[in-house]
Length: 253
Image 1 (tube, rainbow, N blue to C red):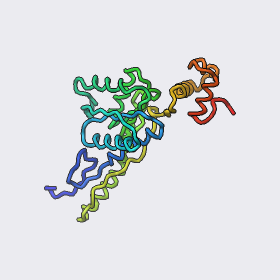
Image 2: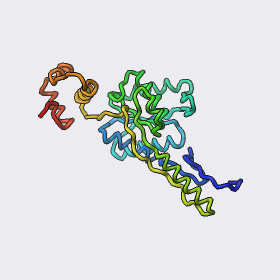
Image 3: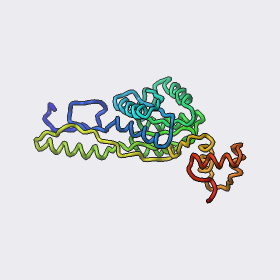
Image 4: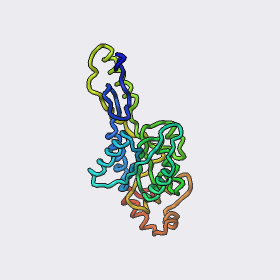
């Protein structure tokens, strides 16, 4: 730069000319979409914050779903990623209306863990259970943000440590008077799954409700007969549909 001191920009929030190392935001979005599709979700949505990296993540998410022939709900909202994680006046009301209209069985990706944290709160206030009714996925894998949520949040690991290593390597090259080469984009390292997505969409509402009840009451005593009475179906119907969508019987074989 003008001071003649080599430096590398890490995690730029927008395109910059300075040598830099960033995360591959489109790949982050695609990974989120693939994660939801692998779990069997047909309805997906993305909540962004309107800036460059959020837009790139949304584009990757929506394009991957479009490649699979699926639509996705989308909303961009002003959101402050500072200490308050706040919404401008009226924005939270708009977001609550959007969430309420998504419907049960939706898989929702947020552009950042801080926003995912707030989305969990909003879903709960709207009477939506997580993950039984809506699953929520964040980005960043910020341990504190994910774990202080009422429901611990699954999140995309953006491989920030690799960004730092690549940045140090580029800086060393520049200090030696050499060209640092092209600015790389680091691919996400994967997804750290926590409670907010620990559910599978079985494609059958009865089976999904039965699995959810079994999971929530795993330590209690339950029988197929009790479950069939609870969900107002015959024992035979429950067993048949469970075997079809889960892949094994509810009873010991």
